[in-house]
Image 1 (cartoon, rainbow, N blue to C red):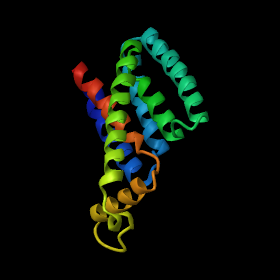
Image 2: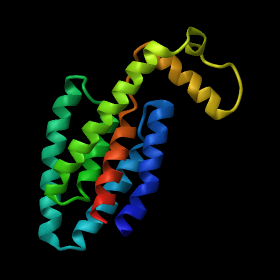
Image 3: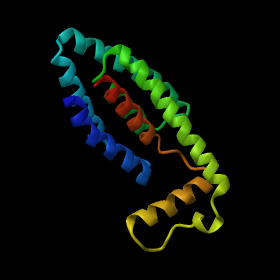
Image 4: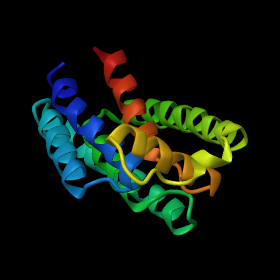
Length: 165
């Protein structure tokens, strides 16, 4: 429960920043890694070592996907950092739920690219943060820009942690 309470604000920041700027701050990944590692160390050094090894293997796999252009660097760092706070068996659940959330996100973006009117594809010149964000997202969708996969990662981790509680 404490792990979830500590990680939830970080997941929200990661998702929000990825939606708004298509970047995930390094501080979010670093703090998630430290919190997760501390949680695993509380269970003993063997638990922490297994999590470090699992996170390192995941990082290697994700780095390969990054080199192929399938994931962004921030996504790789965030997923690896979050894996540090999980038992090795939970990492598989995290990957599956994240992939499912990413698939739903991709389908939503695909549907929106067909449905958005052309006038929404131009960024709004002024206004509040939410209308501007909607216009910018519409512009990105129409141009087939990258997905904010940090949102799928945050949803995947939150779902796995909530299921564990």
